Image (cartoon, rainbow over all chains, first blue to last red; front, side, top):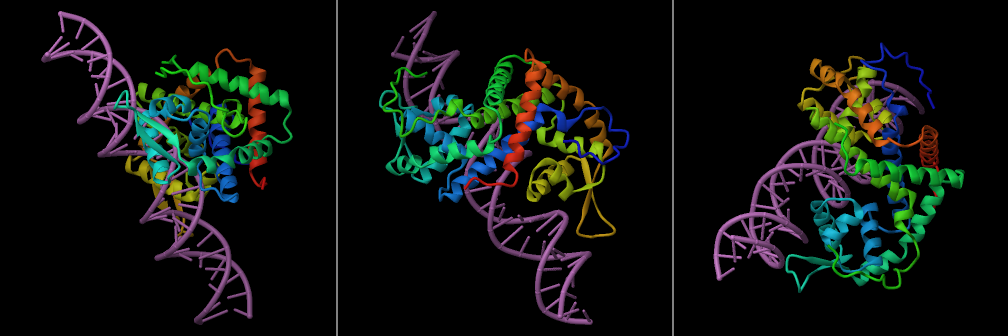
Length: 161
Length: 161
DNA sequence: CGAAGTTAGTTGTTACAACAACAATTATCC
DNA sequence: GGATAATTGTTGTTGTAACAACTAACTTCG
């Protein structure tokens, strides 16, 4: 957009342009989407964070996942899952049940409350996405998805040292 | 992991596919990029978070911004800026100076340390970006940037109720 | 069997994010 | 010129994120 009216005094030490960097754009867009989704949930009377929504979705699809599996499916590490599950358990959305076969393992299940809360969410999310992407051509959306997947693949594993 | 292959019992309540949702993809990719950037900084001996990098970059470009301006330039709210600036001030990367003309205002300046730390960062970021986007055609990158900007524009202001 | 290694989950620490409530300061209005 | 409004920044609370260090439970293998 470059509404860049500022004269830029010798441009710092290099000519790196943050506003043009794809990483920055992804970051900013991601923040906005998360923020708006949260607001959408609230507007519809749900006090659910985007992250809790993801966990609810995973469990609605496959109930009884253990915490390590949830971590895997959500690209988070296990400590994070512990705390998110803590919060959701406090709110009676889910419950932990120790596995019989392996007493280290917590299997996580939706409660009746969690399930009924979940029911209303996919539609809100779908509407949110539709709003976010309005006016954008479908093939461009597909390009974005393909590129993001490629970036994710590039980052998992290898290192630029 | 998963010893039992699960058949997906009636697929939850709707057919929403999270892994196909562009919002989820953006979220996952953003996390990975932030994580890898942080690691790159560390590998090169910098204990700088991606967010601190952004603030340093803004100040290197335009020294003496006040906190509200930084908030604007980084799509964050003012309380967040307060705390990030707190951390950076503790680390002697920046300093606050109360404005003479308006004693409510803190102008934020790079310290000598902050400036010299900043020097090394753009190159690391550039390399990180190159690695993240390797093998991806330039026009596709441009499409992604255009789409993300469009999404951001869609989300700023209007609401899907 | 039993010591060593592995895996699942938790806790501690630091940092970032959204929101609400607030103090201090400056601007506005009558 | 004093009440009132708006602006800047801070604090409190809750939730998310990464990393390190830890415990408990299971597995392996001599």
